[in-house]
Length: 299
Image 1 (cartoon, rainbow, N blue to C red):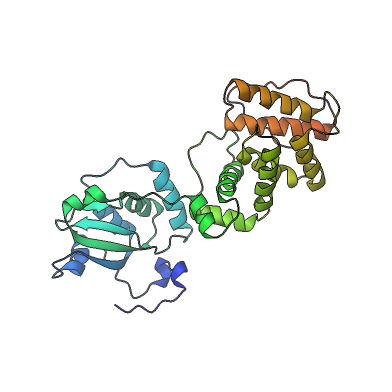
Image 2: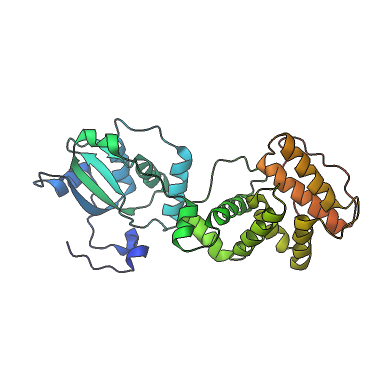
């Protein structure tokens, strides 16, 4: 089938795909595969109503992951769900073999999306589905030639959580790949934070790069000059007197790391407590951070 696109293929959404069939019932969907006699793929516009009907055919599948459904639905509502070649897969007898999270998300979002439907598969084909390694946000950044892609992805995820109001960093939710790319477009300075995090971690390897990068991004939005000095001194510990907050931080994380692992949020909490003490010009002799304490707001 020859399709005339109303947009670049990478930005195709349901609104832009006029030639694609839009079946609203199972009967209309089945009619698309009548007479094929073999597995075949057809691009369609999937409506929430058809998604709900197809879920009735979802008789045997993996346990659903609500967080994945929520992430997919956010992209669908934002019209960021693109036609990427992934398909809803149906057996010859009509059973849905693959795509349940996309179907649930389409129903939840209440919007139509473009997708491929593959029909006439053998039921046992389900055994080999989803056997590939899922592409991560770090993979996406790497494919887009971002430097320090793994660190960058981790910092973007934490900044996204911070912006969403998660001050304990205990939520399982994370940005979709589309949301991660959007955040990086909106805040390109995160790239610089990832670079500084890498340098600091090389000199002082006791705080995760993602915590360093997140802190750098937050502090830099308050005072870039003081942030530069703060991270230089955190890295080398030079030219600061006894009792200085940065020396206290370096000592605390070094001793705690030697004894046991430190929860990620506590690393960021220590950094913010130290930053605030430096900004207020006071010494810092001890850190008191009860378990489950939200990360304080940097000043």
